[in-house]
Image (spheres, rainbow, N blue to C red):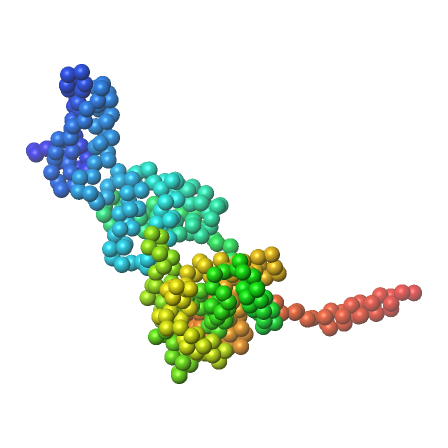
Length: 388
């Protein structure tokens, strides 16, 4: 009867021999191409040589990309990320986000091998991460699920240990939008501050104000507003197309991404005040971007955000952010036309997210005072009748 072959990724008996003043250990390892090869390691003592060889056998990965039970999670994460990028599964900003989260995961579980990555060990790391930053923990859960799904597809394991991690709920803050009066006061303060204070922003005075007006006139994100190009504006039709978003990529600089966060292109009919502003801007410069930087290139959303924070610092408007304007647009449209109209304007596929995160809920006054008063009067009348 033929002797059974050594399973792929494993090795046979470890032997040792003296080599002068040192020792070497050796064993046959069946590589992932099915070929058995002798592997040697040296050490100052026989146990040391055996220990060094054993570590080499455990970490052996001859075809540079094969996933096994002994693959470290740091390496698995790198292979999963490279695979996803090659397939074009994610937008560049998503890749950056995953890279940042993977760095945090490397510190927590990166040196574990796939065979050591139990649900319990992964869960403890995710729960600890959630105590510090809920959003990072939620992204880390998605990354781990993707990593181990990749390992399952490559036969390193049979089940995904990240499939049943503890549920993490991100606290949903109460939505606060601005009234028309609040926005008018805020805009006056915004204009006054950036036109009178020399230390607030480099883009003074018109560009930040025009971006502010575009945000309240459309409900788009700052990155989408700053990504609007001249060709996206049709003044005669009174429309603008939202096709791009801009962001600062690490090691690259400013990037114009030809896609929005939701991946859908939107076309808006603009209110007159927005059209007048765009008409003025397009006649004042010839830059490709509608809201260019001082150099005529892409205006960095981080710079716009810095200017915004300087404007509101130490004032009653510190609670107001660019996202507040997005919520204000959604709340106004929902009150007038319904939540689906607000969702369509914001680019959401349904109104579920819009209702949960962008529309301020009014608390109606419950008025059952009349029957309660009648009950009280009746009770008082009964008490009076019972008196001698």
